[in-house]
Image (tube, rainbow, N blue to C red; front, side, top):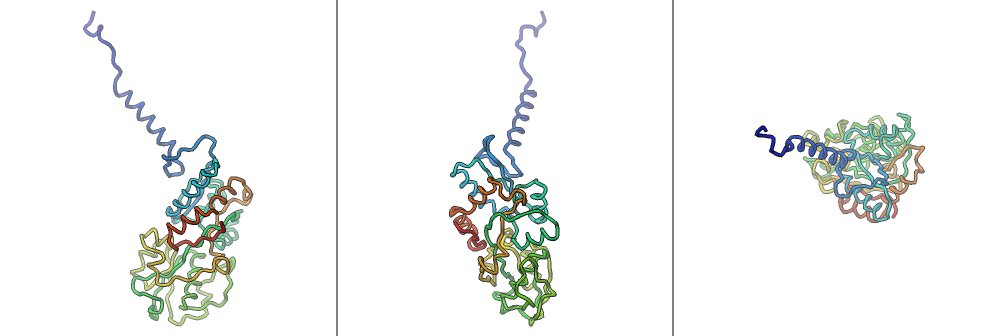
Amino acid sequence: MSASAGKKKTRKPGRTLVVLLVVAVIVVAALVVGGKVYGSRPTSSSTTIVKVGIVSEADDVIWDKVNDVLASEGKNIKVVTKSFQGGTGMANQAVQDGDLDLNAFQNSNFLKTQIKTEGYKLTAIGDIYISRYNIYSKKYKDVASIPKGAKIAIPNNPANAGRAYEVLQKAGLLTLKKQDYQGTYPTQNDVASNPKNLTIEEVDANQIPNLLQDYDAGITNAYAIMDHKMDPVKDAIYNPKLDVSGKDHQWVNVIVSRTDKKNDKTYKAVVDAYHTKAVAKTINKEFKGAYEVAFSY
């Protein structure tokens, strides 16, 4: 009999380690949905996942509250967000292609032009909020101090640039030839008077906060300001009053679905959960005036 014959065989530790690693990878993969990890509230097999495209991860706090409302109402529906920061056109294409169920990043005027220019069959199924569009400066404390010949940065997106021209008009820095731009946008060609001979340059909206040191002033979305750790209201040198139900309604952000699914009951439940007092309170608390609620509850 050999010396090893009476010894009990033992399993090599390497195989056990490999098995444990494989199991760990599977568990982690199961917890990751659309790039965001959900570990605290796992979904059941009967839960319907609704994928929503956004452009600022700051909005996740709103959608987390929507999920809380859906859960409190006993709805087996959960929203999962996907960020398209810097790629807003992709978010519409993703809904059109069915890769996303909904998106919630654009105002109704932008949606109208996207439908017109790109041929998307998309429909707004619910208002959410209007994002403030203020004037910012690192050099001046109010618009009256902006000198002649000043350089102003505005977004290079046609919709956002158009809204920026309207803000400049509200601030008394220029006037436009016409007043109603529903479905279209004012451009530099629509400037009727520019008494301070301002130079207006279109640049990437998300970079405007970084470029304020190079410009006399700039205008951009509230989410771009927040992403750069600035306060959209307190750090503004001009904060125009908003007529949400009137002429500024075209700038209200909307939840968008494919047109052939605009009456989907699950999507309606998501919109109804959004249009609640709990969500309105979250928007007012978390964004402190940067977003103004644009729905009834």
